[in-house]
Length: 87
Image (cartoon, rainbow, N blue to C red; front, top):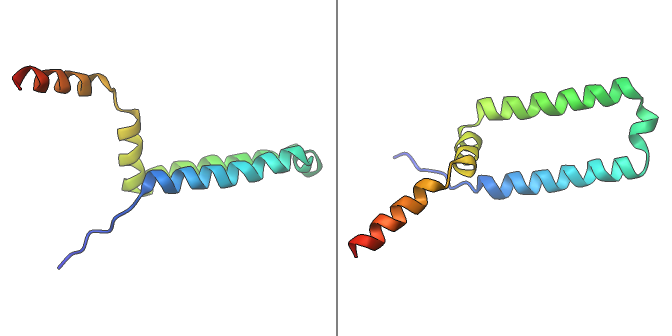
């Protein structure tokens, strides 16, 4: 029997963005990026972009969450209006 796992993708993404964003802000405030140099900072940025793209490509839960997050909201209003009219 297949069991479906319950994921909270939105919460995981928000926690990861807050954690790593906070670390990046601390690094910026303490001058770490200036000490690393332009080349290493560019490599870190390329790594972060590649990691995000591969996560998007390999994780269907992330893709589904992003599509729901970015979906147009106008269709919800139409359905609510239709339902209210039929009640």
